[in-house]
Length: 131
Image (cartoon, rainbow, N blue to C red; front, side, top):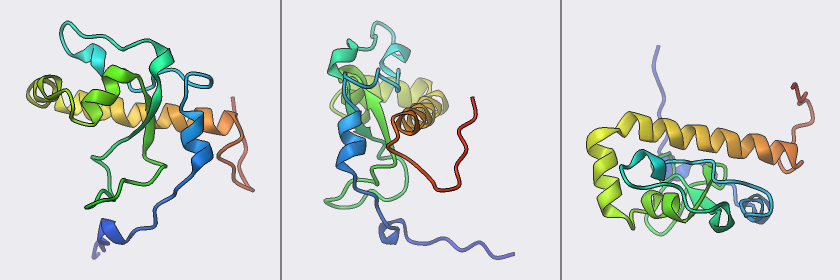
């Protein structure tokens, strides 16, 4: 069996103002919760929540973000870590908890997408919502 790997830069990227707008304090809490992994840190208040593109996924390129489907809602502290503005926390996480960090990013994206479905922003004609 041959595995075909496409250049991530060539994959289509979803751009959605409504998905990004839903990543706001009005609709969502911080779904990343990565700041609390760093000793002495905790998440900022939920009133600072913004969409955070998880750049460690496929599709980041020079001058372009990943698809809006690779977004998690993040507070100010988590966003600073995701974007690399808080280099002390980034280095601590890389050295001490790289797997847990990625798991939190994936869980944050999953929770964000589930909330988008609840808000009616992600739909599929054959989807069934099971609770």
